[in-house]
Length: 224
View (cartoon, rainbow, N blue to C red):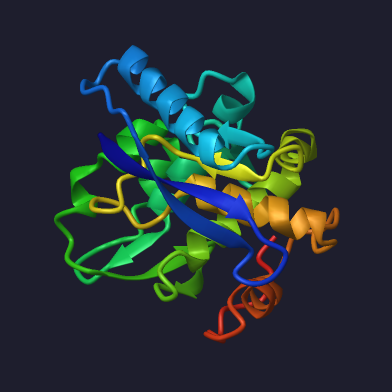
């Protein structure tokens, strides 16, 4: 047996609710094993939460909708080209001893995520996105903001999220990672259902005010 998080939509800040769900776990690194775990996780969750609509957000999802919404597949549009969200996120990290490593923009998402410099450059101190600085706290602020604004740039894919009220990412391990695309998806779905999403990108200030009202960081203005 194992436990994984399910992120539900919520109508008020922080616009998601995390539930730990116990399910029968299938060991192994094969995609088929991970997909069995997705099925078991969802079945266990739905047994206790009938009527919920749940979607896996990852490249291992059985539903193409969830695959398309993965940070590996979503493209963020900039004035210098379109880049995978995951590559952009990794390329924005600034550490005590190096970064940002902007060459990761041309790497595949998996190559960017596994680049050894990300683990050999000391502590993460901030993010740099087009020469603008983002704080490293709250720890998920930049990732959530980037994911949600990327969704706004991809309205057809983003609209799918409003059809669901619970999300998972079978690849997310809280012991190894901080950011979770399933949580970001839940936040977007909640914001959209409550009228916060428009055709325009959400500025860091607005996002902070709405989603992190108790923290009140001072990020820069809209960068798009």
